[in-house]
Image (tube, rainbow, N blue to C red; front, side, top):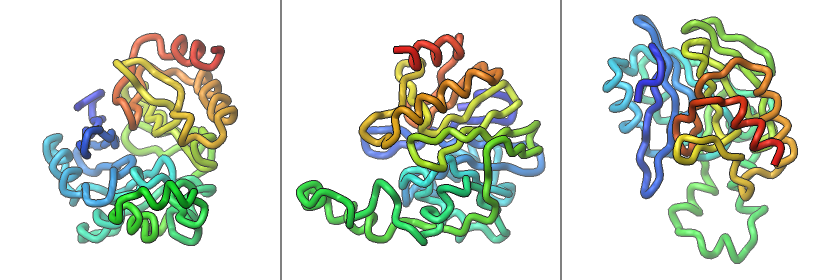
Length: 238
């Protein structure tokens, strides 16, 4: 789904849900923001091709954070490419993505035994051996990536310590990751069950009021538009 010139939301189907990585490109190169679950690389390439973008054009992947459904197909894409692909992520989430620390929300050692025993064997194996990849460039709040009309890094912790959102100057589009979710084209707070620091997450949402945003791509729920500032204010004042 194209949301601005050179910006598309890739709608990846998995079971009964949809994940929404973002593709940003021009005539010479492309950047992918988040990579779905493990095993979705072919679906990602198909969605890219629908927007006229090939794997050969992919120069970088930016991860909004460490969660399994965001880093999932990254190792597959890196292996499939016959050229180097840069990997960007916030410094705070870098050790989790690289595998030197266990993913915060997929660590078997910290899971309730009853919950663990109820998980399918396939999920258990994924938790024990999650995807990992080297982060070639660490990001911090306020960094600006000049490509594709400009991308501003906004640190939005709460969902994870190193969660980031990206403001794309094209179309004044915010790629929010899991800093917020969308329901029926309206913004909602992040999901409390998987947001360990909700107070911090709400502070991150308030921070977004400082930016000129016309539309928001949420990884869960898709595109939200229309009085974005008013929507965020309402959610953070409740």
